[in-house]
Length: 577
Image (cartoon, rainbow, N blue to C red; front, side, top):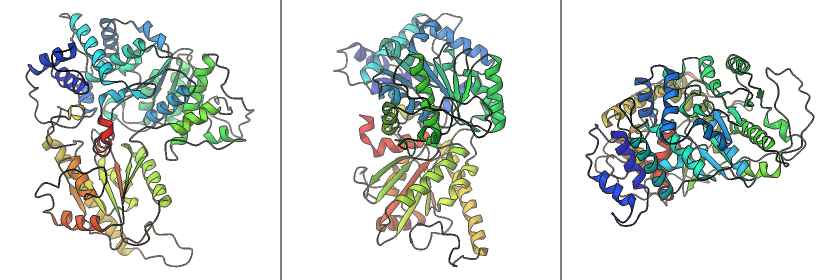
């Protein structure tokens, strides 16, 4: 299968092995290099799009698809009962589920437990999806388990089944094998898409389940209302297994409650973080943004529940809680977070989510928000971060948006939410690190062509230009408020006249976009000079002069986790080593 060849290349490109032919991995490389490259048009960005498209094509009966995953598990040498040994924490949600998992894993690792963590998507390298004690598994371990699973599935194929599962299913199976072989104390497993029919839902007896904030996403698979999506997310609930959720809108919360009641799953509502902080020191979070407090509250309950199940002594002193208002669900315990919990929350890192990189005059703000509610949260975080940043004593300040959006999302709606940030330039590019790269295996998608993704970027630019023109017309008729006590302007520092509404650019890859934005002023990102012709457009040439002279440049990268991953690959070369 072409996907197997391409992703085996990805797997093997990560492994530092001796000379070719000296090891089984070297023999595998020889076998692989003898095969023809997949005849697919274009070398595009890594994304879930290929998985989503395959799911849509092969959707059929979702329950049948889930049963097929159990068959793959059996062919790989495991039974669903074997997964019970992993003491799993299973987490779903529309936004914040990855951050919730990261908080939970770090808290429990702080207790000295050996943790496994399966998440998606990856940002730079596929190994990021399978972590032991917070670190991506080594290239050697990845290669070993990849080949072992691949050969086992090849060996057990017959005429009645497809030999290889789809990409995400393969990695899910591989994660289970790694965690069992490495004898982790627990595994934190993030749902891929939805819940009820997600391939991680072959887990039969998790210790505890969690549902982070719900919203609209993946509508072609999960439904076009939050209630339909809530039904899918509630599909991970299991009989007699405690589950926790954060406060949700009334409709989806009622759906979650009904799903839990149907199978006798005890479902609890997480109290706000303020309730756990009351009477003690405020909790410090390693992830920025007010929205992370909801994720941290859920993570504390998941970790607390797991520790209680394990009969751990240091789980935090319970507080007497008397809710002042009736809650729609039983309230989860209010307890005093332990020092292990506090340190776990404080030290959590989760790249690409409200992440800030400061490089000389440039400050990069990276957040993979890609739904309306997560982009709203991103905008709040970005503006608050700007308010806290040091203002330059003299010289202009420039704000740049680097954006892309994929799948069935509404880019016009997302871009409209970003307008209050008042960017001087908007830059659009596909989630492709380089135009043509031979070492980009982890960030390729063979399901789309370069022409297709560039066309989408041009559509984003058109949406932005229309929004910019609408804003300019509104500003023309809006009287300025100069009276004392009047509304404060959005701009945080004098930056000179704002460029005209045509101040947007499309680049063919992330590298070119970053080269134009940074103008050689990022001390770590120092690529060769821009290719000829990239400054031919007046906006590009004039903007380059502005960026070279700016005292401070604030760059928000958002709209897609895959875009953020490509940016991180270039700005943080250590992540690829």
